[in-house]
Length: 357
Image (cartoon, rainbow, N blue to C red):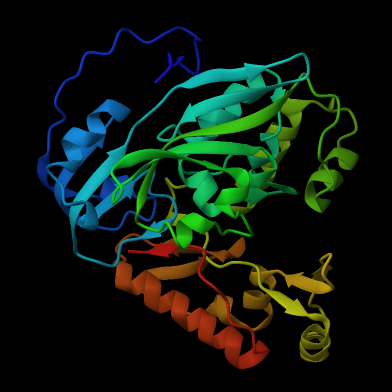
């Protein structure tokens, strides 16, 4: 690959000398997932350079490999996993640049929020609304992460991946990735078939316009008119809003939003609203409405569901928390019970946003 630049000092890494990665045995993944759930990796390797991938794969059957990033979107329900590769491919480099925009390529193991911080500090706009989202860069296209009026697909150009079955590197562009609401080809045709190595995004240089249309963001700036509008303040405001309603990982194990916001037709919305007059719907271009899963959990009373080690977070019912001693099956059972209550009372089936392993 071309020279990779360190994301924070913009200096080249030292010349890479290949060292065989160590395959460790029986590693507990409790500290490698944000729910803090125990799970034993029978074989465990840290991947720091793409050049190491072939060596690791020869020692781990490709049909039994689990790629682990920051562990922020998973529930380990299994007690053991045969083979785990921890993605630690870092670095940022400029692929293309002109007077108005540039394309960055980022290692897939880099923390997403580190990338946001880097771009904000460099005054490169496009992902500032996605500040404070946990997880790695490699998960961004899989989930098509989104928040506060922006989705990853707004900046995505293409990615480099290794195909386990074809045993070769491939490029997948934005159209081929089929990015939708928390959805992509990587959850369907290419699920468990590829490893995302690096991701390219297009950013605006020294932007003058900012997306603050999301209601809570707009309201914050209206109430704090003294705050100058720029990339840093947009990211800071979003961090403030998120921290006010989401639990710290130091406080409770969690994976953020557990369910997707459902989309329904207008007739179904009218029917549900007769039972729940407070229900809000956000009209979409195709004459459907997107509902707040959090509001549905609240209005149906599902947020009051009791469990010894699992609960809905008091400030945000869409977030399920591990009180400290929960197992994976406790989390999943609790989530299924919430889904049942919402379906029984509102006739809407909530989809998991989280991957159950």
